[in-house]
Image 1 (spheres, one colour):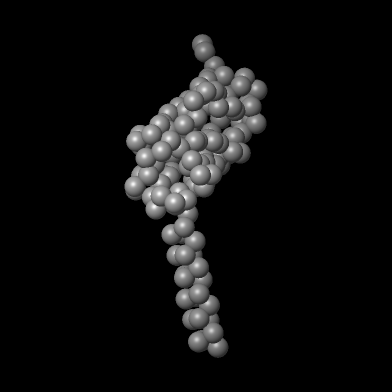
Image 2 (image 1 turned 90 degrees about the vertical axis):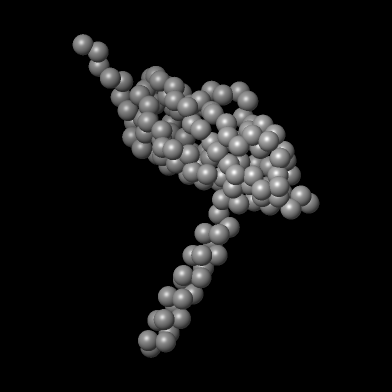
Length: 137
């Protein structure tokens, strides 16, 4: 019984390492290069405000532009940036998000996705916190 339990632990650790190594890296078709997407810093903003999300990546033998997109933003939070690319040979880009006056309050895990020129995708997650407007007075 102990051998079976040990086998289960070893198998679980191996599967964790295998999936952990794949997350965050994509290999563009035919180039042999790789990009690794770094986790953006968490963002906090009040209703009605705009915040900047810095998206950084590491390039290994890959210089083409990378398209950035966001999924699972809180209700009422939108991306206002119009150029959603990290330029050729650049390692980061800044993207603006705006919370509407009635945006959903609270914390939400948001996915940022980097897509290379061949359509391969890599993603990471960060937290967006929407707070009520600060009362003046």
